[in-house]
Image 1 (cartoon, rainbow, N blue to C red):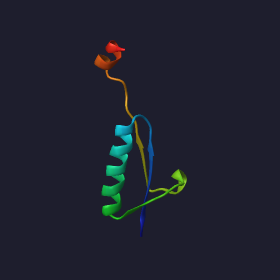
Image 2 (tube, one colour):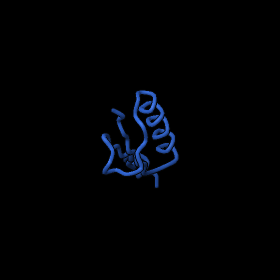
Image 3 (cartoon, one colour):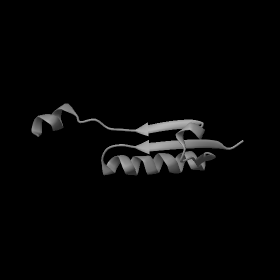
Image 4 (tube, rainbow, N blue to C red):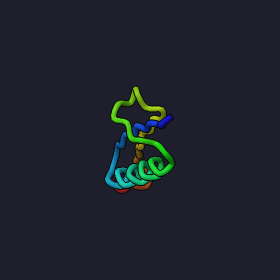
Length: 58
């Protein structure tokens, strides 16, 4: 049975790269990418947050 992965990325360009790396690894492990979150076996949200030090500089 094929395992389906839904991956949604929020945040900066670094998050997009991280999501690409995650997706590549998961596909290598036998997952296929799924566009419909409700049909996926695994749902991942890649997010980020502003760290205190960066916020203080702004």
